[in-house]
Length: 330
Ligand SMILES: NC(=O)C1=CN([C@@H]2O[C@H](COP(=O)(O)OP(=O)(O)OC[C@H]3O[C@@H](n4cnc5c(N)ncnc54)[C@H](O)[C@@H]3O)[C@@H](O)[C@H]2O)C=CC1
Ligand SMILES: O=C(O)C(=O)CO
Image (cartoon, rainbow, N blue to C red; front, side):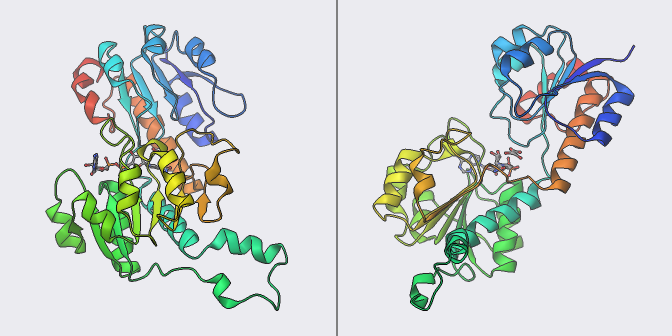
């Protein structure tokens, strides 16, 4: 008999066929994200579940006595209650590496769009406002090339951003991380910097850290005051790495020039959020990894992790905090 699994998000035919070869599966067929009560009901009798960002809580795990693996089709896993997963011996896997280049591209899309005011000026032209009265200064942005970038969190994706910044845009790159990364300094000529110095010197501050208790509201009122008045904040990490109230104040008072945001403290972001009313903010609906190629690769990686565990194999991408459980299932 094949092991039972549940697929809690839409998948391609190819991934579905792959899972079907190895597992007896059921899948979420509704629109949008799966409601949590449905997920809870569906995983009561399965050994594995494939999700994207669904919160994996103690309450949910309590209801799923046969569950061995939660395979997240995402690199981050701030949605996992890691302690509960340890307690219930449930492995958690994620999809690192395959999305690095795509997310780095998006960081640059946001930088360029914010610095050169692309969405704002696109609307300007389409709304017929470009006329003989338009003064060229009205359309000015700021340069990205040769500017100083400060990256907070130089991991897998941060490294790709640094490479683009150094070799593509010839920027000076400062970085902050918990420990200096000498190998990357040598490879890319990037320079370690204390957070305060990085904020004081950077024209673009790029956030690409995981959301943890330590990084929650890493950027708050004090940090915005330390940034240059002409600086732009790019957040491709998680909304809650930024204190959004403080960001709104910093933008309203002109403490910083603008922000390019792929993520928000509350997602889906409310249309009432003041950030969405600001011309100097470029806002995206959490699309860091959302290209056809990358999402296909992430889903296949997530499917492989799922199948590996429920068929007694070794999954490639167990999150580091849960690797101690590997002996139990794999
Ligand atoms: N917007 C989007 O769609 C996406 C967002 N992300 C976000 O990007 C994050 C990073 O992804 P990866 O590069 O794959 O992770 P990673 O684990 O390879 O890198 C994270 C880096 O942040 C550093 N870090 C952790 N805490 C820190 C702190 N307090 N101060 C400074 N540095 C700290 C770590 O040492 C590590 O070098 C993910 O956790 C996720 O939240 C990732 C993919 C897509
Ligand atoms: O992988 C992640 O963490 C995302 O945010 C979506 O790709």
